[in-house]
Length: 101
Image (cartoon, rainbow, N blue to C red; front, side):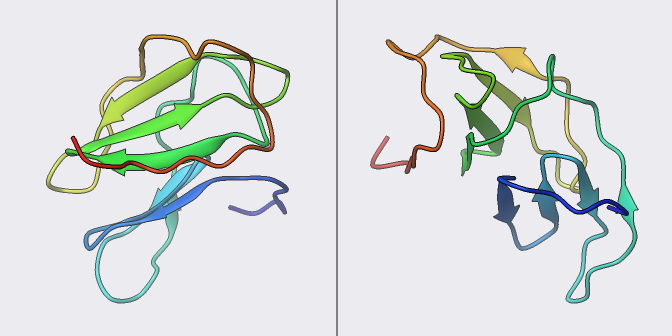
């Protein structure tokens, strides 16, 4: 990431460090950022969660209720982004957690 970012989501897994703009190489030290498949549209002030080998991106600006997810493979790469069931209302600047199953 060569540009500064504002309101971005970051997830840290044992194999990789993800931001919405790329993935750092796996291992105990952060390596070079590599591009991953872009979300269907740019957004900020959203949330990013990891659950059951998938990243979930919810809401954000421009105001949206869309939820997208991508599989996280064992080597730290991502699959293509898929659209999931939308939130009931648009959300931005919100928080989200995964609880239970």
